[in-house]
Length: 478
Image: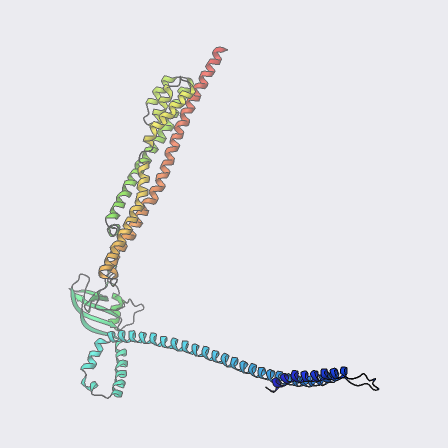
């Protein structure tokens, strides 16, 4: 405010001085002219000097104020800049703390997940152990002396009994019991307990010793295990019963005595066909039909190929001599496609070459129907068989999904029928198609070669006959 007042007062003062100076000038003009003896400063110049001095003082004051203001501003800027830098460092430190807390949180979540997984594993282990030790738990529940013990004493007693139980279950003991022999009869005898993992049975039946390792037969019973209708482990059972240690142990490890173990049977061809269903039988029928046609076609082409060579060997000498009748008689002794083509050729040897060649081509085309017999049918069966296999695959999968929809996926045996049909039909389709395509194309190529041989043989006879005629004409002309 002081500066503003001074700035406003300065022009007023300057105006006063200028007015005074002008008035002095006016009085001077009205006064009479006097020659000055000394130099005097005019009021205007004096006023300007005073004003200039005043303005210089104001300028210096303003420059000082500006310098102080700049210094204060720079100091404030440095202070704010330092404060911002501190705040940035604080934000960076906070971000690092947040990242550290996030990492700690992730580690904690992983630990929690691992603990949950371990808890599930422990639960499953305890459930399995509880199911395995169900028989032995009943004894503890019925033991009143055990129930009267304190908690600490119960734990100690449990460990003692567990140690004794492990010793008992890991030893070899002989007990009397019943088991089934190979014919299914139940007999009484000695059962050797090899720990808690295997059993061996020995019993005398009508003076015949039945011995061998035992397998679960269901409902807690056992049966002699046989491979190819012969018991296994008889020597091991006798040695263990005598208290001896055999060199080799034939063991059937027992997992569950309540489920009977069935001997795996080898599948026969009929079992495989049965698993393929109706479509499998259809594919097999296609395969048998294709096989019969391939054999019949091969025999027919073999006979045609042999007769082709025989006909040409029999007819060639007569044609070389120009004896058409003899060649015709020799050709009539043979039967088949080649014989018919050659007879048509011989009957028309007196015609011009182009006409004879047309007759030969027509005869071969007529015989192609016989040479190509069964060829198309074989290839059709080869093409249809994999399609039938694909149809069986689709129907098998549909049956599988129907079972899943009705019964779920709990029992894999219920799903095996549809899956077996799906895979077996595909296998049968490929088994039929691959050899049928291969043999069908080979036989077709063989038939084409026979046709070519017939055409070449007929042309050879035409050439022989025409050469004979030309030589005869030249001889007559000479």
